Image (cartoon, rainbow over all chains, first blue to last red; front, side):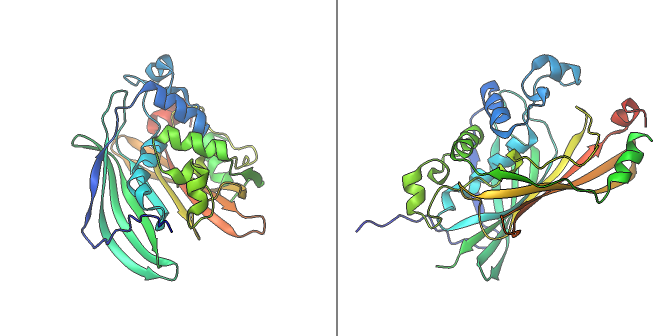
Amino acid sequence: MSQETSNRPAWQVDDELVEQALPPITRLQLIKYAGASGDFNPIHTIDAAAEEAGLPGIIAHGMLTLATMGLLFSPYLEDGYVKELKARFSGMVFLGDEMSIGGRVLDVVDRDEGNLYTFEVSARRGEDVVASGTVGFVMFVR
Amino acid sequence: MNVIEHWRSLVGERSQSVVNLVERGAVRKFAEAIGDPSPLYANEETAKRSRYGGLIAPPTFPRTFEYGRIQDMYWPEAGMIHGEHRVSYEHGPLKVGDEVHCYTEFKSYDEKESRGGLLGFIALERFGEASGGERLFTMSDNVIVTPALRRMLGA
């Protein structure tokens, strides 16, 4: 009989998720995200449009940065799910930017559906925080 | 009526619900675009063996749905700044194959003085429900109207 390996973590308040470095932002990724999300605002894909908007170059969709913060929890989806993701955008992300994502446990409460862990999460380019917020992750009770 | 007065008049208005389907190909492409390698978004065999019994969608996937239009709402093509986003789920992730009824509501318009001038804040809420009306998710977005945009809109 085969068993599914579980990455079920034993999180405690103040535990930090291992910071993940993401591959540099490419034009192709922004094109793929525009197509996949339906957000065709040209400041994300057309150089001339970005320049007309007063930007130094095309910028990543804020929602793409938010979506990548969800990657922190993807290894644990067999054992739980992202119940809430909330964030604000504080900086712009440009082509070639090397982003990193990280998080820390703020709180845990028992709920009927499982243990609700609240994480502080952020996306950074080096020292600059470009997006920050919280994620609520429910770990199902076995 | 200038655009600010127009937005104030829309508070509480909502769109007609639009039926969306959580499609396998759309989920796979979205997961690839955001760089998420989780097999639960792309590998049907693995997903079938999981507790979900099938493929699921990433947490920010609801951005891809159609929510209908709030009647006559004016929305500038560019210049709005996305301040904050929130998505929350009632019971679990969306599953590939789910039929989701989606609509949007113009929640509020507020203003605040800042050093750079008067800032406008629009709050939009978007909802996804199952066929029976059961809420599946809620999404909120705060959008900022800058003094520069305001001038450009002639308000």
